[in-house]
Length: 252
Length: 265
Image 1: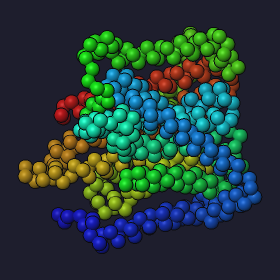
Image 2 (image 1 turned 30 degrees about the vertical axis):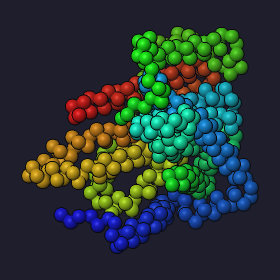
Image 3 (image 1 turned 90 degrees about the vertical axis):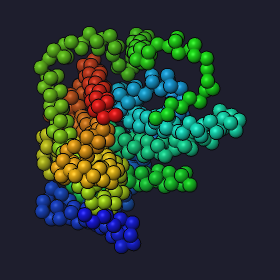
Image 4 (image 1 turned 30 degrees about the horizontal axis):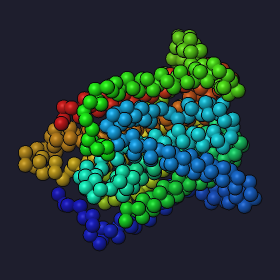
């Protein structure tokens, strides 16, 4: 059997070429499918429909409302979830009590909470933020706990032998060592926050990209609908890329 | 895994006073329910139209005794199971193929990781347009959502296993079939389980979510319908049952995981 040649210069060029080709293949597949069936809108028409909706100013409030809900829900989840997770993982007993609570609720389809939030907050951006928090906080807490517990105890001992205060130990030793795992939780959290917000907007909203997709579906404005679906995909990828860039900078 | 305790060593008198962790969790849940009951009884939650938990509890047997609940539950479960089975098959097979061809895996890796970032449910309306209202668009959405974690976990797990295990298989003069069945699969299974578990959770979330948007049956559809008809008590009963079911599924997966891991380690 030949050994894989990953790592050689030729293979690296092939990987780069392949990675560039993947989105092109996806767009080509979309165009081919659109040519076969009228139920799939053509690529150029979809892009034009979104550009037109953006240019006439009707799309902007929807995009801003969605982004506001996702970013606010994600930020709240990170601000509350990371300190809580790190705290809960410090003591063995607290961890034993708390971890199954979060691991168990991770399996609950978050959409069932939407009626509860709608009755508490009304059809507002607050209900969407609450949905985003309910979805994003679970992976963030779970990975913060997991990351903190996998910190090498020798590092903690070293910190103690240097007479670090508990705060310094947390900030300079534990959180940096747990950061890679926490960052992966942040990325999952962001994805789930976006999913929760879009899903809520499909069901009940006064503004939002999800609502616009739903409206375009009802009115059978297929180019706009397909274009907006791709826009949501791009928002998800952009958010993930941003977190990944922060992660890489933090790792340095 | 290391147990990290930031506190300085304490005299061992304290753990003896502690109740078991499950009892502490039960007490926490009971306290939350009590707070909910009190909030409703005191009228603080009246404006939101939230029923009291005791009221829901009284209604629970009637809902569970009705045929409609069971047909909804069966529909959701069947859709989830179909999507999960397809995702498990495709994810395991795809992951195994990618582990076999590292170059292809390396090309696709950023896109597979990026697929995690895509809120797959956003494709549901496009599937509705193409396939029409029915279970096909829901199964397809749930399948797409579930296949990503299964595929990625399989690819990573098999990729890590291969070198050492291939050597072992060769030194034992295994045929390729024997190597896969006796060495690769047993050692990969514990690593594949987290991906399968996540796949099931995602399949269920996508199914219930899609049902909530547009469907004609299923637990997600029913909760949305009860919400629109202002049947608050029945709606909360369905929500509580849904949460209990999801937590139960999670416990079941944990149990399977413990059994599989025990006879391997």
